[in-house]
Amino acid sequence: MFVLTIDQHRSRTGNDLVPDLLSALGGVRTVLPFERTVGDEVQGLPADAWAVLDALLIVLRDGRWSAGLGIGAVEDPLPRFVRAARGPALLDARVAVEAAKGKGPVRVCVAASDAPGPATDAEAVIGLIGTLILRRTPTQWSVVDAVDAAGQQRAAAESLGVTPQNVSQTLAASGIAVERAGYPVLVRLLQEADA
Image 1: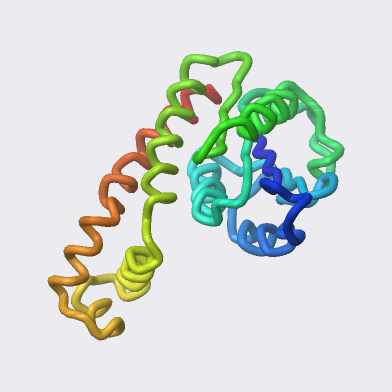
Image 2: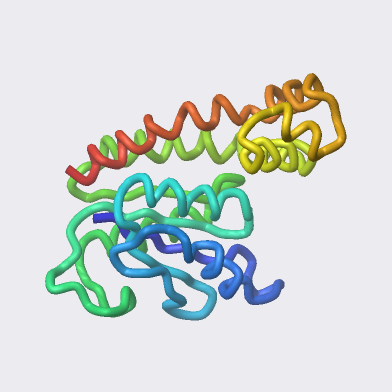
């Protein structure tokens, strides 16, 4: 099972971002939904490896969070709320989020007591994906989002008032194709760690 613990970076000097994060994570499939557990911390149990990826993409794009992913057992029966859950995966998530706070700029760590090798490999792939996300400019994001919304580059170019060549060049510079090529690799590693 997967446990994701997310803590606001530099929360003492900024606004409470938890409500916005919870709203953004609302579409992620979960076993137990994301909720505020204490202070500026959010925790949830994503349904599977693809749901972990969905949640991490939200957290990484926002850029104002440290995240720890714990992989392993969660005691049965599951409670109604994640803050009442117990088990090794929750302990691993706690260790991981504390380690992530000391990292930068991609503040995500993965811990799996029963599968440290795949967890370490998954963390490396998250680092690569996160680096591409954090280097993307606002202009590149607007083009990526427009192409995703329109479904094709020509329609996105029309909606943005630019040429299709401009869209193509911006997409190439954004590294979005390389980033998304890493998704199935990350998911496979997460599944191995959870097996």
